[in-house]
Length: 379
Image 1 (cartoon, rainbow, N blue to C red):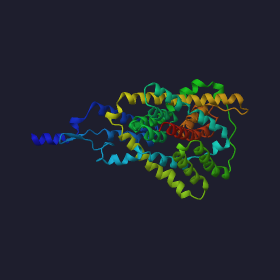
Image 2 (image 1 turned 90 degrees about the horizontal axis):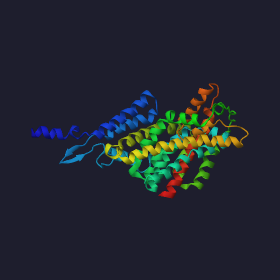
Image 3 (image 1 turned 90 degrees about the vertical axis):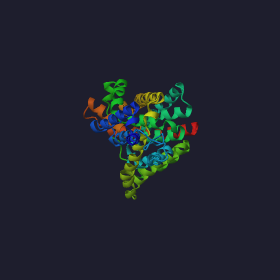
Image 4 (image 1 turned 180 degrees about the vertical axis):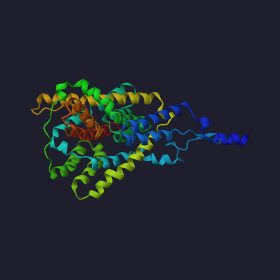
């Protein structure tokens, strides 16, 4: 019987809690949404399985619980993989791959669309003050507010710098709302626009020269980092990746950055973020507040982009379809696809995707700048 009891102690059966069960259920929902609904499968499957991994119950050794997959246990391999999240190493590498994937031509051809990307960042700062009102410290409030940018790597980067104790709920919230873009945004877009506005057709974008495409990452990096030096690492890697793409002489590097390299980092960041969401750290009132604030931030960001597009139409000779303002959040390219979907429901012959990509990529730049400003002010 003593031997049987010792064998039982080195299993996790006796230490499996209701919290573990709840987190495992959340993981299964993430995996289901990824496979069945195709909601960001490249993110939700690694995160979902990471949650399963992070909620393996402990065993007792010499009367002390030992967590083999804990990101806080120095004897766990996950502890070392998680270092890239905790120190903000993975997000700039993700930005490198995103830059190599991104075509800024639509933004270059119509530069005023960058204003929509800037307007959508209003959700970040509105939520910042909301978090302060709920009792969060300024650094924590800034990290929570960045969820409104709908950019998971940026949210992880800023929270790793300002509020590492909140990385798990902030990252899960950011990626969850990125995956739910097709669910959250359309009702807001329809509520804030009329059918006549949704039917507006925009002029085709002009052709952009190679000189413009090559100059854009260099000039953008110089201007933006002069204004917000805190954003230099994120914007630097984003624009470096884009320069690899547009230069025409580094195709091997660009191909690697936008395929196998970014895929590897995505796997690592997803599994680590999921693994950090253990029942003990995730199922707390603080996490629930973060999820609520994140949803509010995302809705405000979407509404701000749409409303600002309507305002721009008051002074513009060439009207904008205000739906494209919703793409100002930096969930690339999902927000742009949602704009196309909602526009097609009104007029199947109206193609808004290429126009929506302008504010969409502007949102990536805008969220990185917002993160840099918050880092500089709150660190």
